[in-house]
View 1: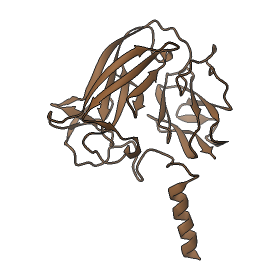
View 2: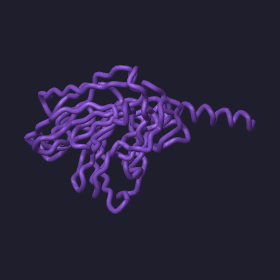
View 3: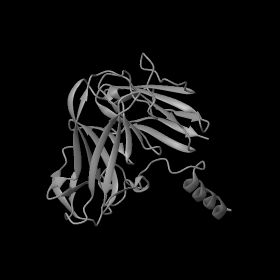
View 4: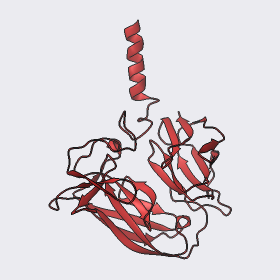
Length: 271
């Protein structure tokens, strides 16, 4: 009988509610650096607190960045990579040469983590003026790929008029006036982060698969909203609400947290 119960527990842990694991990290790992045999781990960092992982120039990862205005809001970004593949399912594990993810930075400040070659950048995330947009490649253990002591990255100038109000939506839809999403949502979660505390206290939201949820977060410090399992991120400006609209098309239990401070804001239980 005990063996049967244990078997059910193992199956439940692996399968959840029919979806993938609740986070993109390997078991027992976090955003901290994991071990990996590729390249040489340097003491130098990338400016974001991540150590450089240096490899030889021959066969090293490469990236180019193209930026195109979106007809509704902001810009569409395309990353063209060589000797590199995006590996969202193994993020948090050991570094493997040629695999990982990218960070998107505006004037050196991180906006999002990218798990594929395309990304929509909302105009609300870019203040008016001239800026520099950068994409940088990282290994699964969050170390930055580097050649000759310099991170593997690409940059391009970006000018913004500051128009196109509101926070970006999870699928690139422009928000309606006043900061709300432009298309109807089935559930709205509103959270505030003050002095390292979450209000209201983190709870669990139950949703049917295919529903749309709006996550509105106001943080007293600049941070990044991160939905585990869906690998969706949104920059949180200090003191201003930001909204991420997400269609929950995968079943399971998914945590919503702040990336830099590691605070759990809520859990989404999708059936």
